[in-house]
Image (cartoon, rainbow over all chains, first blue to last red):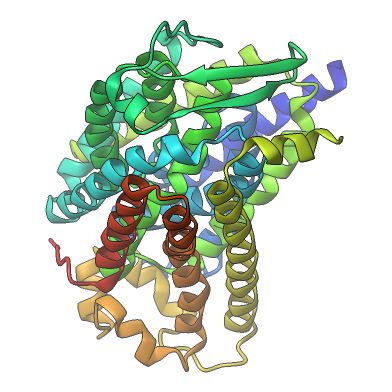
Length: 319
Length: 141
């Protein structure tokens, strides 16, 4: 146990070291914008990107967050890539992760297609609007908003409560009409759990904001999906987490197309990131059994807070 | 009965169909992404943008990059598929298209169940995603 704790600590330090080194490598060269190839060979940044996203994949799984929410603030804050390409790659990273998880979650009935379809229609439409706004605004403004949103996510992670089995006395009219309910097998209780939802109109309205933010910043929106599905609409926590992950495959698809069509995709950034996060996630899942969730969660919040602050300062022109 | 089979029974027909199409699409997309990337980095095909030049481009905004590299926005990459770097867009675009295929595939099942509300919702979602993919929605700095 202690050995694994030590390994995790070393991995955390490595992630910080890489992020700091990449930042100093970027900052050390004042002429980087004028002559970016002077300091490093072309493969340097994709290689660092691969290592950082690998470590990010481990901590995303252990910290219970999506890769996208870590990717955009860290990569945009500490790497020389323009925010447009980081958002494009961030969406594809989140999309690939959601596509990979989707089939299993749907087959196990943990993700509900019936719940996802109306929510996704609103979120994906708004993600397109968000992407268009995000690409139309000046980069420094988007970076400032990104920093603020990331810092708010940290606060949300620190304060938000979760309800494993929310008490839903009665379905609302809309969810009844749409027949949004289901049943899943709860391992911890050894029995089937019937679930239904309430406050559907409020929940759907909140997904307008979730979609806009997902598209504007290229973030996977699991951090916002789960509280809305769980705390507002009353879906059980497992259903909320699984449906949220599946939802990303739809929301991020719409925004990803906008970024793809606007030229915000550089394969030399996208593929190392996707592979890095995926390999990191595999390792993370193995470490999950022995990791201390609270400690990891604090580490992730610390990384996120640091990256959010960096994004804010960069947007303000002081970072 | 195995737990997995019980869980599959709890999911609706269209949910299982969606999952199965998604699974196949995801594997094909990921395979295409990795294979085309290997072709790219191996140098088998000529590159449109030499790798040594990329650091100069990835610091620009996307619109400046398209202008500087003389690349069309939208589906302009299709014309450049003969180049190793742009071949990568096959896998990327396929992964971005999988959800559209999934939605279209469940419509007959929804219709068979006379679930007209969800048929309309699925058609609307597919239309929204196709609109996003079409490149008609222009925005830029």
